[in-house]
Length: 187
Image (cartoon, rainbow, N blue to C red; front, side):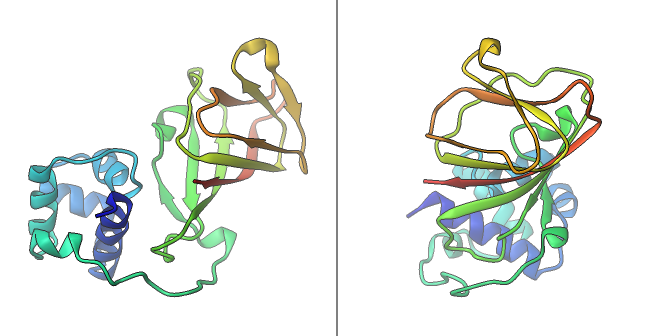
């Protein structure tokens, strides 16, 4: 069983029941961040955690592992209709992630619109298990790969493609108060 399938199925079930992440967190006793990370396949929950979430959704835990619901073959969306979510502690660094293809359950790519604002703290370098494509849409950022000596100023229209597991971070340029990027993760 693909745990990404389980994560997607949890999210689909929550949305079909009209529950927010906060409401599901309240029903399970878990934090909003934990539920978001489970749904976005950022962590692997224990079987006990999955059982608690399934119970809150009024389903048998076995239903989470059943195959066959690949979702629609295509979905239409708009950038301004992405589903807001917390990813990689983004809420601590004044970043907002919006999933642009959340309704496509069997997707191979994860496109996000990310908005950046001036944070109180510096975001550390991170790596991903997926390749990443970054397109700056608005504002100016410094894209940093591996260490601060590799800082590259980016303006709207600039792109970067990173292979998986390359340490990197993005910071607003000194003169910028806001930036927006399209980021696509793909395995």
